[in-house]
Image 1 (cartoon, rainbow, N blue to C red):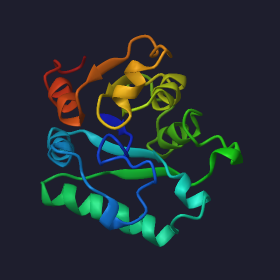
Image 2: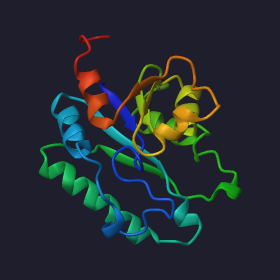
Image 3: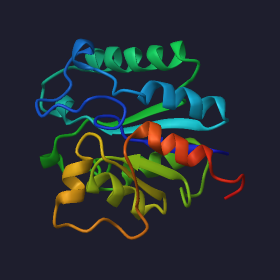
Length: 184
């Protein structure tokens, strides 16, 4: 199975310091929707894994999050693609759950739902060190995009996990992935 996991805010859509709290605030990054559609058309199963602590903080409710994700899915569908699943952590950081990245619980849930023992070698695209830490814990192939918080992650003193590949944005990642020889 050609599976890949992608963070949402800062990778697919604009990230906001005050959280994406409504469908109107959800704005796709240039080229991201087309990249998702291309990946789908090339046989990749696209799964979104996102921390959504705005739920736990009471900034929006479940119906609003569903409306935001419906907007995302409709945009990808209109471009000829599909998102196979969206997994999210609804907890605030002080909840100390296992599903909030950098912990790997959300990614382990994805593996279980897709009938996989693990996610070794599955590409994971994020814009923060915490995305990479969660992905590293389950053996994913690590990809950081410069969009969203990516530039800040690169400028920080915290080293990126070994083997992390850096791309300008999701479209750059898609270009890289689709240029790889089959089976690599």
